Image 1 (tube, one colour):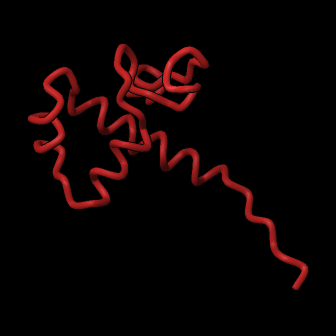
Image 2 (cartoon, rainbow, N blue to C red):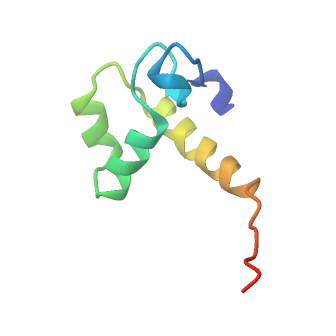
Length: 76
C-alpha cells in the first residue's frame, strides 16, 4: 500500500492541507485524534466513510514526512 493512494493535497480542499481522498478529513486531525488516545476502531466508528487502510496511510505519510524533515540548528 502506498499512502499516495489515500492522501491528497489540493488547494481547493482544506486550503491544501493533506486530506483523505474524497473527504475533508485532514491528516493532522487523524493524527491528533490518535495522539489523544483514540483507537483506529474509534475513528472508524466516528467517521464511517473512513477505512483502516486510510488511517494506516496517514501514519505512513507522517513517518515519511518526518523521515525527510531537515533540522536547522540555532546559532546560539
